[in-house]
Image 1 (cartoon, rainbow, N blue to C red):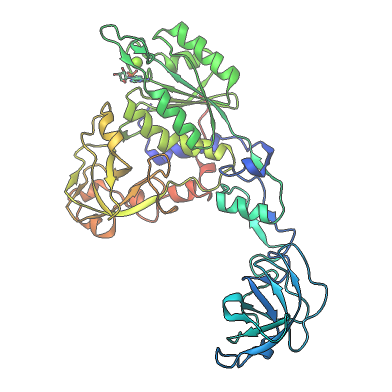
Image 2 (tube, rainbow, N blue to C red):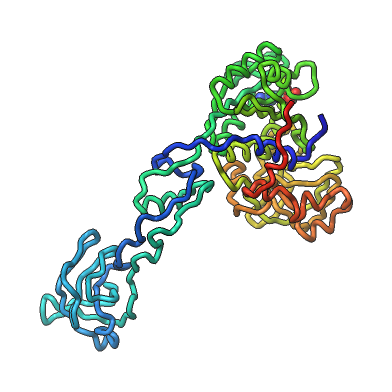
Length: 464
Ligand code: AMP
Ligand code: MG
């Protein structure tokens, strides 16, 4: 099978994702879930005119010329705490005591804040107003936040905490959301030992299930961590078929290369799976296999820990989000500037581990071998370096920052696959022939794929 470009690989994967199944989710559990349908507001927000301050409801016209040395005298005719309503009417020369959130009584058109008033000395119900207010001042108008019927959230949207708060304020108790896939996380390799046990010569501690389970959770899916599988065809077959019995998708690590002990593809085909493609033209992570098992999905990731991590972010994360019905699959991007030159002499696109600092300065996170975990730990973003790229110090770049995944807050939107080289940086590429506009220009099909536009239909997963 030929090496696929990343865009083609992702398009093939997205084309096979079944439509989302939906379920009702209580609002308290809804942040991070993908909405199945649009939601309209059943009420106005605020639902009634109310006070923005502790103070007094007045007619603005009554206190127009009030000053500390010439206060306006008003008669206090009542009081309404938040949650209460004053049933009477504010008429000329009167006022009503209000608190933040109290409904504005009839007749009043403004609220004087408490700090601009003083108790009178002539009578218990005398209030002195020391400053004027304009009509509507300190009043929160009915519907000024949201009008009844307005769309509060759209289908395919990942519900943020803030939006869940808005839905709660509109009185919703739950939402209809895409189901979360249960994802089997399966590590293969006879050399792998679970932590907590002494290592025999040649053994290593298994680490991919920790990162892959966390990345699965970060994509809104439910990881099911499965036992380590030894390198044999029979063991891999059994582990895969048991995993598919329990899960909607299975993510494996290791055993997808060309070695005699790489059994994932063969075992998958033997249990009736259909391999859609194998190998993607990226570094780290070339030996990546994607397949279908009925409606279920296999993501066979390379075993090297950084390769597994990067291929998950680039190819599995968008798939799991789309499975839940998400429209926008892009990773958050942050613009920055290189502090030192970076090159990619390789023929494959390199997703380099970098650090982007609060100042926007970007530097390499260290050694870039696919087994080097210290630079993965030190990184907070990935920089997409096209084949042959040679960027000078000072080149503007865009860094893929995976929010809580890569431990970095960043603006959303922008290019999907990580770092894009900025306009000046593009000019600084020495091997410009190797950098296609298709990969880095606005004509890339990728943004439309990851942002929910059309595109994926055109590249179906081939039947084996
Ligand atoms: P493989 O893709 O199976 O050829 O593995 C490539 C490299 O990654 C080998 O050095 C493995 O020992 C290592 N490796 C594979 N799986 C894991 C894992 N789950 N945790 C840590 N290292 C792994
Ligand atoms: Mg292996």
